[in-house]
Image 1: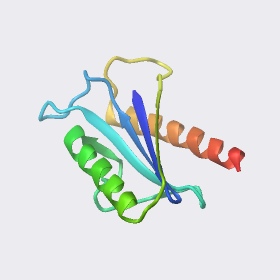
Image 2: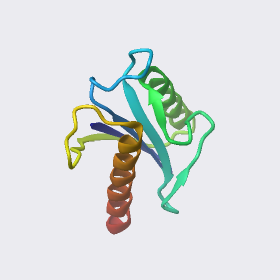
Image 3: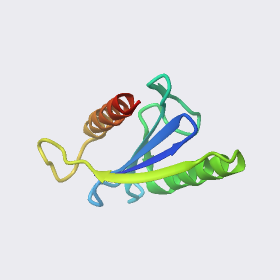
Image 4: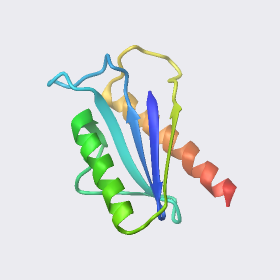
Length: 118
């Protein structure tokens, strides 16, 4: 999984792009998207993001672009970074539940790192 972090103000939104082998029924890549409040270290649910965070790549790009426009409009400093996440078992195609579990681990590591950095 390639993981992209979009940070602005007190929010971090994590976009985990699953392997190109993992697609939805429309043959579009799957992305897991979740947002977190960096001050309270809790998940923030937005209407544009499904409860489990699983979206196709086009919808995830729309969220990414909308968040950047919002941050620019409010003059928030934007930080964009990325990393690679390797699953423990390394299956070539992950099920939705495995993607969600992986996102939980990614978010925990990110938020723990933010807490320690303060």
